[in-house]
Image 1 (tube, rainbow, N blue to C red):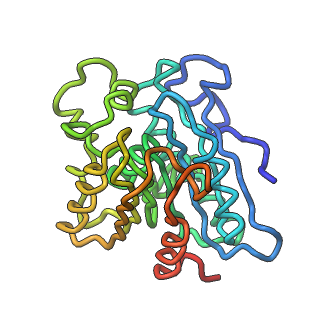
Image 2 (image 1 turned 60 degrees about the vertical axis):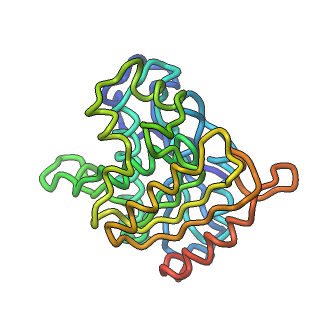
Length: 271
């Protein structure tokens, strides 16, 4: 069973436009059954074009991770639908990752096995944190702010990556507004921001995806290759967009089994 959602900040979130639920970024924890936790944690970022949050890419993934021994947290981040623009979403994701790492440290889990997964626009947000993290503030009064926001690995499901030629225009507009400056577009085209410090990544996409075209994953994988960052890339022939976990009605490929294999190779599932 999921926990009750809890706010990322004890007071108003930085940059909040109001006090409604949509203005309060939260985490919801999904815990493995007693005795099943393997010490790893995962921050889950649902997709929804920076306009909404898809439940099957949030709760659905979190329950799957918990079943496999990974403590999962679904982030409700702020959205363009409610007037928010970058960097609010990135700030929410960074705070979420720091919080998950802090919880790992205090709850007997492994603070060096904290991953991030994002789908579609949530994949863009995950890839943004994977390329725009920081080490934390050593002298901060808030213990959470002392934690690094660098994920130890990333899982990107049919992600928006580029804000250039192959972008998803709705996600770009909801994130940056109308006519964003060219330098901001480049800074948030995450295939241009990969370095040798970018964490290892698992990416999957389908060739039939007409919502977010496969070139997004290909560009990011090519950038990881150039930077010599370990990655696993799966491009499945069949399937569209927003598939989530495999189910007959969704025609999703078996990416979940491939992902668990990769996580095991990286020592993420080992207690």
